[in-house]
Image (tube, rainbow, N blue to C red; front, top):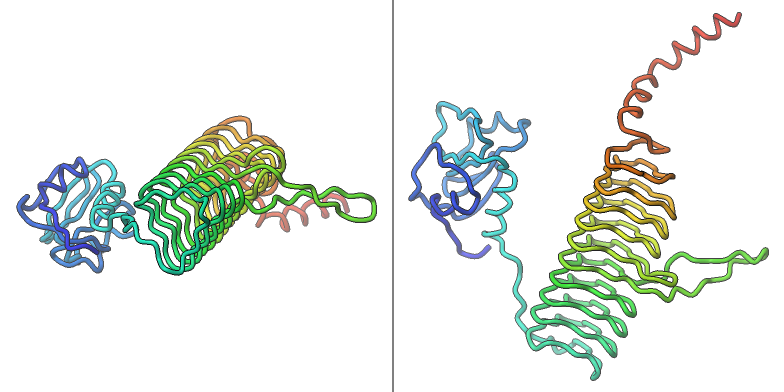
Length: 339
């Protein structure tokens, strides 16, 4: 962490909050949990599960929701705001800023002579860049990355180690890709001849728009003919599989181990819980929420939450789940009635 500090008065303006206890001149030099924070660090309370830690916290500053009750013996300063979790995020981003490209090219990096790389791009050890690649200013390419032929990478991207970008992949600006992700590998396309599976050439691309983050070991397949497209602002967790010709709408969030089958269109501002699966050739409406482990096998035509397998409206799933433990009793009653 950089040697940074902020006065509480400055933090008030940063998080758009109100100081309700403490002095504005006090300086804060870091962030930490309620239980571990020291007198020079800030913490927050947004989940009431941790409210008992308020009384014993040694933090110098705590961000709380508006109207929160402050313990009588609290020695820390308190800023109240509508969303303390968001405020804490802004503080953490201040104390842990994103890395800035050094512009250095490691001696072991291999770059084709036809590649067009801005002067401020950082290439770490054993990076391999093929012919026709273009990389915009301020981008960092981590150790061991493979950037294949005709890939385009925009400005201020952060590509962590061991990422593979296959032929023709396009990244917008400010894209973050975590270690081990593979973009642009062949989609799972085969035709049955009656005797064997015949591979279908996958000739589309993967197109990633601006401000997308892709988690570790996530795989996004190239399109079979048209492109696989991840729209701006999408956030993908680790170990996600996105099939060929999928489109994921703006600002949608996918949690770990989600699987999206080919040619499915996910709307804008959707949320898919961990291990949810979506069958191919479907459409999910803007604003839909898919619960963890749910299996979507049909179109979702309106915003709202679905759960279970096959996925149904969340309220229906809750009612069905509540009946599960009663099934043996109900079955015994039915058998007695039939005797």
